[in-house]
Figure 1 (cartoon, rainbow, N blue to C red):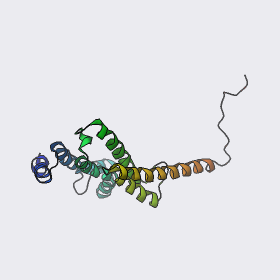
Figure 2: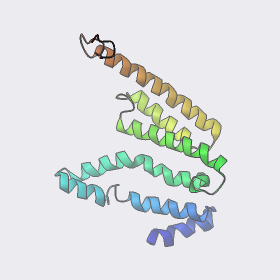
Figure 3: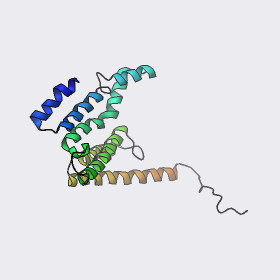
Length: 179
């Protein structure tokens, strides 16, 4: 209630943000307070259940939720995601935002299709930000960077799977067995 009555009117009146986007903006940040230090009530409750250090748990929760901090800004920059526009505006915006969030979350988690290197993490974060930005040419650049990382990850995973098994042979199937 406080964020809706205090912050939303400021966004609407001073920054010309659409009403629904302003309310979703403050709603998301109100919810994210549950996982971000120093408040992070949800993280502290989980820490108590797990018997872990509350501050370390709060910082880990922040790291895992950091991609969610972009979503309110995306609502403001791309109101079509809140169904304020046509389906032709919604489809590319939704695709690029989802892919951008996956890229950023993968970078912060340190894993996409295999463990990510520091360079891949930085490139995934850059690609994610580029994909989230509401411009088709910029989003396409982000998609190209992310696609290159996906190819590298898949090749690395295939190489690790092929050499990690020692003297592994092809899987046995019954389709060619004689009866």
